[in-house]
Amino acid sequence: MTAHDVIVVGAGLAGLACARTLRARGLRPVVLETERQVGGRATSEEVDGFVVERGFQVLNPAYPHLRATGVLEQLGMNAFPRAVRVRHDGRLDELVDPTRHPTALPRDLRTGLVGPRDVAAARFVTSLVGADRRRGDAFDAAGFTGPLRHKVVDPFLAGVVCEDEGSTSARFTAWLASMFLLGTPGLPTGGMRRLGEALAGGLDVRLGHPVTAVDTDAGRVETPHGSFTGRAVVLAAGPVSSAELARQGRPSTHPTTTWWFATHQAPSPSGAIHADAERRGPIVTTAVVSHTAPDHAPAGQHLVAALTLADGEVDEQAVRAHASHIYGTETEAWRTLAVHHIPHSLPAVAPGQFARGRIGFQGEAVLCGDQFGNASVDGALGSGQAAAAEVARRLGGR
Ligand SMILES: Cc1cc2nc3c(=O)[nH]c(=O)nc-3n(C[C@H](O)[C@H](O)[C@H](O)COP(=O)(O)OP(=O)(O)OC[C@H]3O[C@@H](n4cnc5c(N)ncnc54)[C@H](O)[C@@H]3O)c2cc1C
Image (cartoon, rainbow, N blue to C red; front, side, top):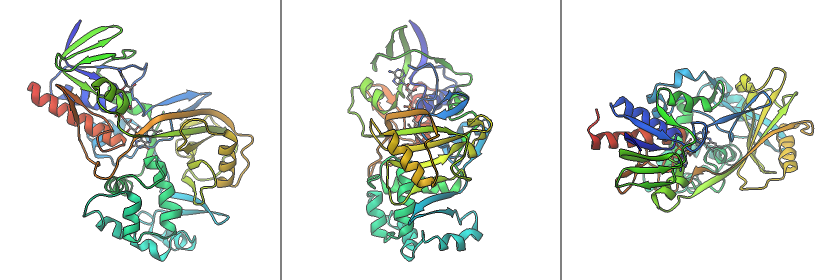
């Protein structure tokens, strides 16, 4: 049996952020992780010389808790274009962000993707003053009902919050929108796994250590490699495993399935997110990721991601046909590199649940992760940092 100040269960972003913060406060944490790598859901793999994220994901450098970690500068960020390309009415149009490129506005207006009723998008912000509600209801109430809403914003948001029913908290949606306004999402050179690796630097992380039981009051956890005891236990094992270990109810989550294709011919000259306003197939958003992160594909090849919200079996032909429709190009020659079905991709954030830096409790144990009201990288990091502050307060750290 080995004694530590704090046992952190899970080396995802929440657990790593927690352990880093504990260490900075003069405490000695050990992080126990089931997998053979750190990073949890924010990870990547190598397939035939391609860097393939585990599910289509992006990193927003404006996230405040990410900035607080101090690792952003190590990541070599590659920024996506501040534009979306939308298939609609038989055309593929690009809408460029006028907040950064004001001269693009006349061209944006000519696409037909922005109508008079879309001016009400601004009223969405004022609608947040009262009680929180579903994002779809808040848009309706604000009168934001033009083509920008239905053809651009709704498909784009579906890919961000992993649901297309409009059920996510309007306040959480507004916070995400503010992050998109402040920062340009991108990908680290080498993939999302680099974030977890950077956070883990210098920490005592035990890979291949699944925690099978937790005695929260005794500060003891069991693994196949023996027991670990600490003056405190933090459960950062993701929404489902943390709930199981704490014997609490499982939070509601959204699934995703992402397809990764290799091709010699890029289907678009742009790395922008592409979407289908008419939703004629399973793809929610797709992009030529290697335009944004050239290191993600070998020279002369391209990497295409196609995100669906499918839970389980998706017909590959339907995905290829839809990609063909969106890009307006053949997809038969594309080579399938990987298919990532992730049943619990993102916790649902229902109206009233949005929170920043929130944690949970079970007996003497502290719980943290993206399931506490902010389903994002920033939510996981912020919750992990808050868990460390709570533990340090109890143990008398700095
Ligand atoms: C496909 C996809 C796309 C995403 N896109 C974005 C995006 O674009 N932007 C964004 O901000 N966020 C995105 N996210 C969300 C983001 O990745 C998560 O919010 C964040 O990584 C959650 O971190 P976490 O530490 O809370 O949980 P997790 O990442 O789930 O970490 C939990 C860790 O605990 C380990 N573990 C589980 N059980 C045990 C056990 N019994 N013993 C020991 N270890 C255990 C797991 O292996 C894992 O490493 C995306 C997620 C997915 C899946």
